[in-house]
Structure formats: structure tokens, C-alpha cells
Length: 377
Image 1 (cartoon, rainbow, N blue to C red):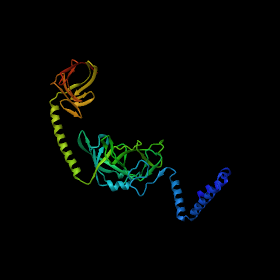
Image 2: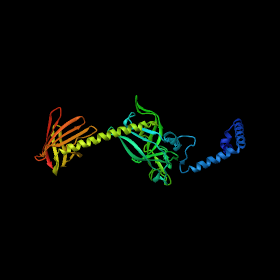
Image 3: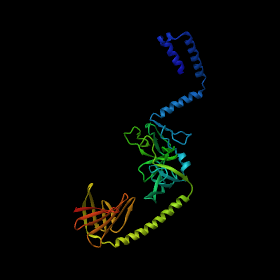
Image 4: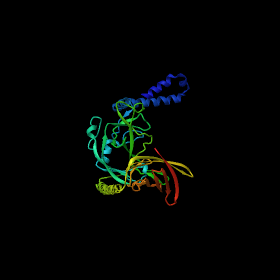
């Protein structure tokens, strides 16, 4: 009926109507007549569709949409997260091998088995958590930790750009060691020049609960949104597998590492037993003067415990993490402390006299000596 309204409006506007030629007016009448016939002949079903569309618009007045029933992704313009059913179909009972994106595309950083035993919601969350063995790397070694995973069904995901558009039906995947909840998306390969920075495939995108005051906030819905407009992922899925050998191999490596750890701890106890601790706490601030200026360091010795520039170690026990190594010993029951510090590819050998308050260090390989003086704290 819109065409009829437009036609009548044209006739009512006198100045415009006078400007229309008879030929144009005849053509307009013919077109309007055809449109009116089409409107009259349209089946009742079309009218019901119109009513349905109006109802849908009304239901979306709070900017909350429903997921498309014919898609594996929720119906948002940019934040296209997997639906619950799609996630279960692809991920459930699979071993999930993840790469932390910031480490580059070729590292394996976290592994777990997905087990959607029960969907979680606000009513059952205390019972809906799933005990999950999560494997991750620390200092190049695999560690297993038993964590709890949740597969939330009552979350509303908000679009990262059209922030008022929020939909239900997406899988909100949570590991309780993280402060955020993951949504799962598919992403294309990303490169800088010829270097691949992120491979194509599934991505785990961190999302956070929308807080009051945000335009996406709705007190009646638990809403989640990516903290950045590009839905940047934290993890990329390297592999979805049913091969239980992946877990078996991890367990074997961890067991071997644990055996080595026990042996190392036993050896360290023997080394520590050969050291004589201090009867009272000694705290020093030592100032070293070089051609480049003054360098101030602090040390503390109590019993067999040492705090070297804030790093805690034990007398006679070697410490190593990353590119830093530290080994502190006391010569018998004397006042002399010997320390070897490896850092950033350099080795410094310290000698500190806690009684005479003198210190020095030598840069190994260059025989470069720096003298220092100490004061008690």
C-alpha cells in the first residue's frame, strides 16, 4: 500500500503536480495501478510475514537478538562466535592442542581434553564444573594441573563494534585459572610479509563480563564482550584429536621430569648441608663504582637463606630460571661470600666480606674488576 500512499501524496502537492506532463502522469498512474493490484493479490501468508517481522522488531527493542537456527555461528555482525551445538559437535571429547598466539604460530603451549558433561548456568554452576587435567609449559617443561572447566549456556555475547547488539546461544568456555571466559571463532591466516603470525582455524577469544555503565549492559542478562574491537584471540587451535597417545606422551614426560626433580632436590639438600649458615640476619647495601657511573645492590643473609637483589635462594644450592643463574656460597664459617651470577649472556663473580664491608665483582672472560663498599641496613 506504500505505492498508493505515494501516488496520492503526489496528487495533493499542487505545485509539483502541475509540473508533471500528461505523459508522465499517465505512466505514473499505470505503475501505481499495477502496484495496487499486486498488493490486493498478495496471499494472506505475506501479511502474516509482515506481522511476524513487526513482532520480531518489537522483541528486539532491547537490542537482544536470537541466534540463527541455520548457522554454526551466532547472529552478530562482527563477533561471530560458535553456537553451543556447533562447539559440542566439533570439540566435545576431543583433545584440544593450543598455541598461544603471542608466542608465534609454531609453539604448543596448552593441552586439555574437552568434555561437555553438563552445560552450566546460573542455577547449576556449583555442580556443573568439570574436573579437567590441563597441561601447560613452564620453563620449557610440561606441567599438569587439575582445573575446573565450565561450558556456559546462558551467556549473551555482545558484538565488539556494534556493542548494543547482544545474542544468546554462543558457547562460553571457561577454565577457572583464567580471569576471563573464552568464545570460539574461526579466523583466517594472518601474516606480516611472508611470515605467518597466526594460522587459519579455530581461535579462543577472551571475553569479559559487561559492567554497569557500559552501553552493552543489561541487568537482566549475563553479557560478555571482547575487550578489543578486532576480537583478538589468545589461543589458536593447532589440533583437535581423538588420539590418546598425545596425553600418554605428556604423562610420560611429566613423570620423567618429576623423577629428575626428586633427584635434584636430594642433591641440593646435600649441597646445603655442607654450608654453614649465619647466626644472625645480615643486610647490606653495596655501592659499585664504574666508568659508567654508580651501581647500588642489596643483599640479605639469614641462616642459610639468601636474598640477592630480592631473589631468594639458599646457600650452596644453584638456582636457574630462564637466562638467569645464581649460586651463592659461604667460605666455611668465615665472613666471605662467593657468588656466581649468570645473566643476559654475562657471568659476574662476586666476593663480599660481610664483616669488613668490602665487595667486588669480576666480569668473567674479560677480567674486568669493579670495587665496591657496603653499609649495613
